[in-house]
Length: 572
Ligand code: PEP
Ligand code: MG
Image (cartoon, rainbow, N blue to C red):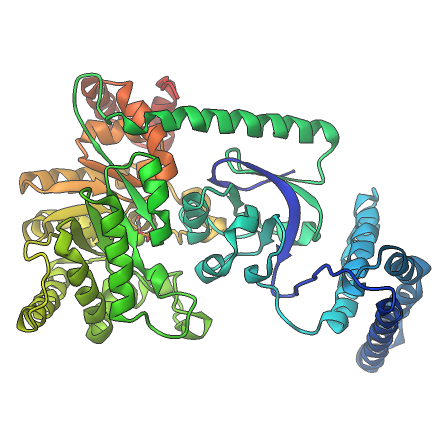
């Protein structure tokens, strides 16, 4: 059992599909009786090539380090000739009429398991050598093709060192039961994507990929942040029961979708949804959102070698606006950079990409790219329910510069007689401390403010949001973070501007009362979190929330704040 960071709620149980740089797709294929001999010959060839490689390595090592060290290769060569390795594979090909790489991989998995189960650290470690050896053989059998999520052809738990947003975009999500990754934190994009797809996930598991083999049975408990490999019957049964219970609970919560997010003393809040792709609008509607508070448009640009055209973007934005009309859609202009890149080739070599050319900075540097997106958004705005929002604004000059470009684009459209919403609202995201500290000035220039707490925490605490080694410092309830949020809400209200929170904090039930107490206008979160937050809002009064918030702001540290919050018995 391994403990990681609970990234996306729910329980998934299934076979592991291990995705790492070293892996390649092992496809299962039935073969005819005539093909059996061919497969066996392929197997013998692969063994021969692997043995040749090992001999070659042995020579090199003995040259460099002496014969003593080179002897390890003799042991490897012996394993390659071992009847369990060789005979069992050949027998199974004959018996089951399946392709060699699949059969060999199964045999390999079995041997590795036997070694892993031995109660001796040295022998346990040898399982890695055997796995490595097996991979060498497999590489000859399947060629060098790299494993990608586009190859999934059965329902699996994806285990990976990390998943780039482009990995997740390429995957066939209907085949993904759950995610478990070595790296990542509460707000890395694997987490956000898993939440939006309603796939259970645990991240930050350090070296899980080295402990799981393809085909292992894995339980992903995304609520507790646990991953269990090859569980026994009792554990498995317990988790099947839990899975059923959770599904029932979710059904209950969804019944709330048509009810208002109103406190017992009559204060209403807007519960909006965050989306990454237009396909999510179904989920937005199903979970009873009051609109879309954050549409992360950069996902349109990722996992491809070209830029999306104005036409393509226009279609996507129009589709989303139409799907939720008359409810509003806040389209965030591209937030590329950080951990979201166009494609692996387009990845800039920045030492600190999160502090680099990201989001609005990138757009201001490349107005040609920015203008295409703004034209597409404006053209899609004719229905009147679209708003624009700029990410990562660091101060008022950036907001003004972006607005000047927007004005140019509007003038162009007017000149071309192309209709758009002349009164389109434009907001700024507050996710950098410098923006939070100057929120009063930004609130004068912007039509609304939206606090991106994922980044605001990252930049306030100086903690990389995807680095699990410092994840313990990534603390939404740090007094500094709470003070900045309060400051932004107050600044917005002073200028009569609506303020929302669209980072993951908005969907955290433990924090809901604080936001109510601070007078936040709107919460925007993954659609699945909405019913839970709505239930909390409907079960409290604003005055009790204010009272709690005052107490919280009197605390000097996170531990004390957490203690206070946990004391409150929220009926979930
Ligand atoms: C945020 O930073 O809180 C946010 C909502 O934006 P993203 O997670 O896309 O960076
Ligand atoms: Mg952000």
